[in-house]
Length: 395
Image (cartoon, rainbow, N blue to C red; front, side, top):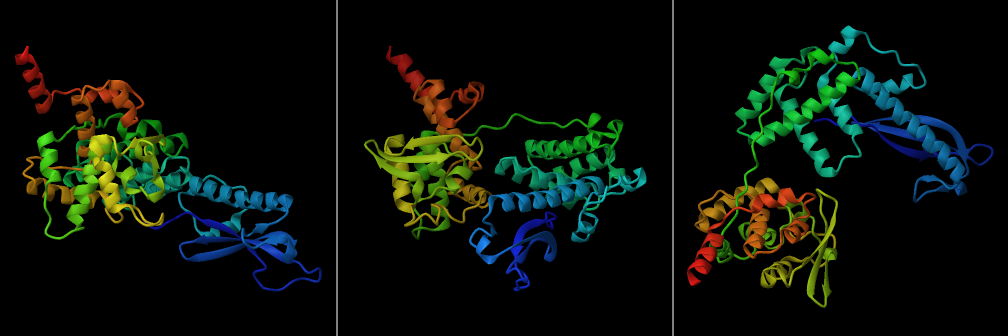
């Protein structure tokens, strides 16, 4: 999908010439999809008054002035997108004008997809993971119908979108999340008087969601995965296996493991410590790698830790690629379950439950905000049943 967001930057002395006072003009360059447009701030400064490394005026007063002009241009762009559904650099020619609302008929024929993209670009306060999920929904919707206008927003359209999602064999909760994002943008359009409240198709279309599956590996299955032998060292299958095992040993999510670098690890009196910030919750956490699972996660770090901070431990392993390879590894390890990376975190939680750790400790290890989320792991496992039976008949 083509980017619609304008990038702004200051340009000093673009013509490489000074006026009679030894000064040059500060301009703002607007860049969009390979095209440039320049806006004059009307402010002139001497070369000695310009910070080349930061590309801003040295004077705090002038810096506030040029930043104010840049913000006005950005606000104009956003307001224009909101009113008319799309934006091009030529529309800056109307900067300073009072923008009239388009007629009702014109609004109806405005691209709803463009509206959603513009709203998404304005959602800068969202966490990166949430922002990325909504972007994925926009791409999927654009694949379904690239040129949907506001006049086409109805029950049949949403029903068709639902059928399209099911035809891609997506999980029910993935489909529900796509609907949730589209519904959000429709409600935003209603708030902006671009769609009538009674025309909201989600008043009648009900989205079905199922309880997320929780699949875990038993101790025997973990051991079979650990004992896999690969014909060559450091193959992609071996790296995926080790990344998955690291998830089992630490309980970290895929995105948190993927971004780990050398700087995340340090030595302490208790051995190697992992210091991280969770991508989903933004909470900081620590893992004592020489203590967890008898030091097994430490061995994986020693195997893959890079020489510097420019590289990650498992560079190049994307979540979809890892999940595909995990299916092969489960067959190879004689595990009768189609594995995905989420199973590593579920296995970590289940292993701690089997160790009879207090639920509050497990909650802290998983960084759950609510202990009710943690309690879903209180299922009876094969290992747990075996231990309970042995204890029972020993009495």
